[in-house]
Picture 1: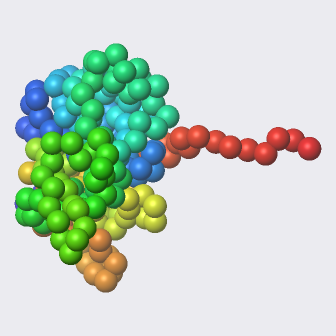
Picture 2: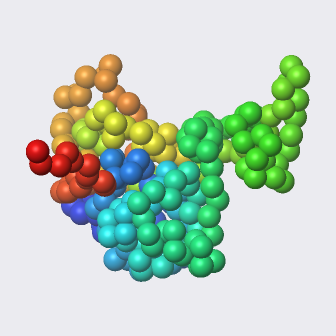
Length: 232
């Protein structure tokens, strides 16, 4: 089975449909599958529910799909630096399911592990807890959160071999490993592709069994917000 595809558009072919749910890795602009997101935008797929920590910035990352109004709902933890995200939400044009960041990560991990739900103290007594089951354990109140799954996971890794074994680089690891396990299909873009056997098995973060397709991308590595010291 050949998992390596020549470009993002061909790697997404057959997976896309209106109304689908996607997961997109990344934290801010770190570790985002930027080439796959651009191909998803160009596909014209509509009515997308996007599960991601945030939505990039206005003209990069998932912000591109907000500009074209291809996303109908975000499941995320942070509006971030994206003015389009903020405006569409406040104007009632975009559904938003806010999650505490750790809860979002665990919901994705649980979905990939086949765990339908878990109890957490995070959010008890806040708007997050409204409408959710409450249960007491050892005198403490917890709320039930459900695992998350997607029709398609879009993942960014540093290196892959041709079987889809993945290694992430430092902070870019973020949400990508758990998202790779929580999609019905998983498409990955990488910076480097090597032959099977060239990766040290002790350093593989995501086994290739979770990966369906791979592309080698060209990455901008943009800085989301630059803070510099004023000249003396």
